[in-house]
Amino acid sequence: MRWTIAALVLALSGCGTMPKAFERGHLARPDMAWDPDVMEAGQRDHTYVSKEAASGGASVGGGGCGCN
Amino acid sequence: MRLIPLCVLAFLLASAPALARVQSGETAPAFEGAVLKDSGTLRLADFRGKVVYLDFWASWCGPCRVSLPLLDKLRREYGASGFEVIAVNVDENPQDALDFLKKYPVTYPIVRDPQQSIARLYDVPAMPTSYLIGRDGTVVSVKHGFQKKDIPKLQAKVAELVKGE
Figure 1: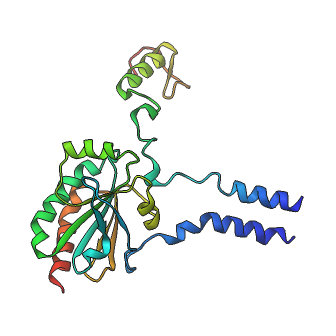
Figure 2: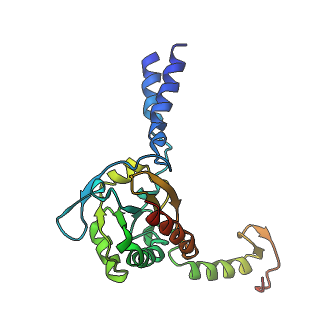
């Protein structure tokens, strides 16, 4: 039991380590971006926000006039 | 209860590489690596006696688009007085680096480090990171990131190091 916990701790200590700055080549690829096209995402967000009568993060109450 | 020291040890071991980060005042760790453009080998030790700007970069690193051409210019200015730029490219696919260099060509030597072993040796904390190394092989300063406005300060430092033998 004791050694199982020790082994687990040893194994888990390798988890949760951030990739080093120089290891982020794959993360920097455009297809890894949250929004592939920032401009389009902004426009969609604007439309969504006005149609949903909510503003800012699509979760806060707002006008719904499409002007915010 | 003997378990607690063991757990502490495990976490210390996991964080041990962070202790190896190269800082100013230390001797720059020796390395050798294959040159990106041909089959030659470059050894840092061969540049002892010169002021060296060791630059870690990658094709996917935004600020490197600014730094590479400016470093090349700096090298042209101070090359004759014993200044050299050595770049270490950490791209996993060296072809990415070669494509980048077609757009931003430089004349200084570039070492390829696709396994990122040199970057690990220095424990490079940011991209780009550069080490200004004096003639005696000691790291004079470490620089994280790069902006165009950093050049005058860097230029002054290089000029001073090149002069003071």
